Length: 477
Ligand SMILES: Cc1cc2nc3c(=O)[nH]c(=O)nc-3n(C[C@H](O)[C@H](O)[C@H](O)COP(=O)(O)OP(=O)(O)OC[C@H]3O[C@@H](n4cnc5c(N)ncnc54)[C@H](O)[C@@H]3O)c2cc1C
Image 1: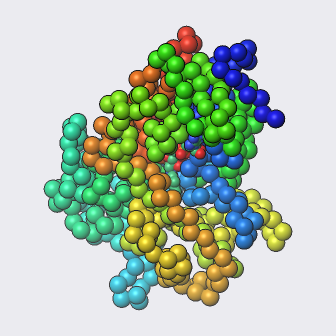
Image 2: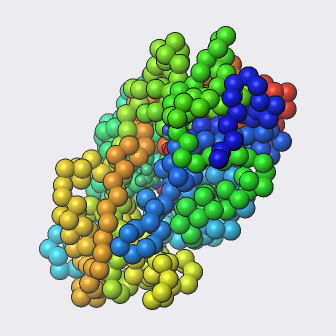
Image 3: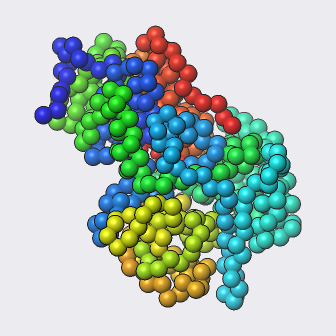
């Protein structure tokens, strides 16, 4: 029987109730628990991790991630979160990426494979100059235009209220069509999951400046070596338990109860009430408003949340009867498939009797997947498999044993021009209520880093309020 604290009489009342066990709620809980605050974390689903989670594929028995989640070197807060909680050893940093050039229109030539890595000892922002030079499918004119464009973007200072999209900005910069399609589009769509006509200049600038221009390590990709569920519902759940956090799964919150101008309790879907002194609401932006008391939903600081638009991401999981490439991952340029990940690479033991992914299990990620929403999944799988076999023709005979498409309709918020003005601060208009989530004001797009930042910021506000101020937000690289 779960222990339930009722409003007003429990001597064991939590200091803080955190609602939502995604990365934002987890980061807030970690920061608070480390400072000795008594936290109860409520999560409606049976697992932690929110949008970064896994599920069991019934056909294979494997635990598969809803989508491959990639962190970059510039994600300083996500990395700190992993270090503090003991998750860091379950990530591997990639020292190089492979870009696979666009398909040859005649179909006669194999695509170009280009290694992308920083040149040793060359300082930022020039450390990736040689890597850009090595993208052989771009012409000299394209590369010079991209280098010029990157330096202009770095110098740009997008003004508050500017409604220019990065697509318009690139046109004004007279970027050649191939440079836009095979470089700018490739990086931005995979980072922000939107088309160039729906990305603000500020959001695009953030990707390139933080990821590629400021620090030699900002671009480096970090990948989990175990399913996300093992990270968050496994190792992290143990860390939380050891630090006194009470985690209650399958515990959906129906609403926040307000009394005397402050939040006094949460009411669960089963009508139970839990009281606390402080609250962190770390659910998605689609759910946040509906949980808030009606009297404050229309406050100007909060009402804007529902105008944040979202973008979908699809991931296509493929199980072949044999490996089709030994590359751990590849950026696929000019195709429906955008990133390919060898799901089994580096994931430990595999064999006939294990449910571990094998080196013949792949995952293809398609960001900004709106056009896919209407298509039958079998067609999408067929197109993706045809693309992979055209890239690696020696795998033409590989048999597809099983496939699965995971389509996340509201994967991330769209970084449209003006979207920054719609994001609320972590400190809500109610003194004892913090908001957290990748959609709050973090200065970052919807990412694991943004979610963790929001949790740390919410925790910092809360710790100051209860007289135990502490710094959690990590500096940029
Ligand atoms: C397909 C896909 C691919 C992505 N790829 C990447 C990537 O490669 N790199 C990257 O950095 N980011 C990626 N992201 C984005 C990243 O996953 C999110 O930005 C981040 O996980 C958001 O965390 P969050 O805590 O803000 O929100 P969420 O993870 O959405 O957490 C909210 C939590 O609140 C819970 N909840 C909702 N309502 C209630 C309620 N009433 N009561 C209790 N609990 C409730 C939900 O169940 C959920 O667990 C991807 C996202 C998706 C969907």
